[in-house]
Amino acid sequence: MNRVAASDPEVVWPGSVTDSVRERLLGAARGRAVISIVEAADLLDIPRTCAYDSAKRGTLPSIRLGRRIVVPIAALEKMLLGG
Image (cartoon, rainbow, N blue to C red):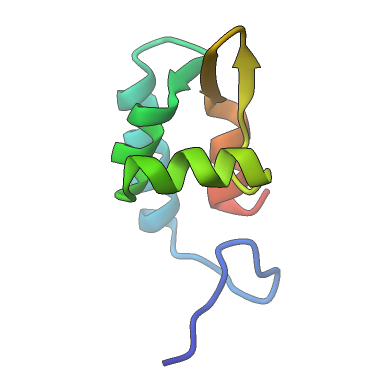
């Protein structure tokens, strides 16, 4: 099975897909600028440990605030929508 990366510039995603992603992000954020790594994992439908590993590798946009790791909504949206 060939997989297509969301960031592939050759792919044009239907409006409904991008609208759905944006709605899920805004719903998860509830007016906040960042979400927890666990919330991001739930949103992306990946295991929590995978989200932490991805943040550590830099493939998931994240910010460390003391001992807490948060994911900026704007950066996550940009990553998912390929912008």
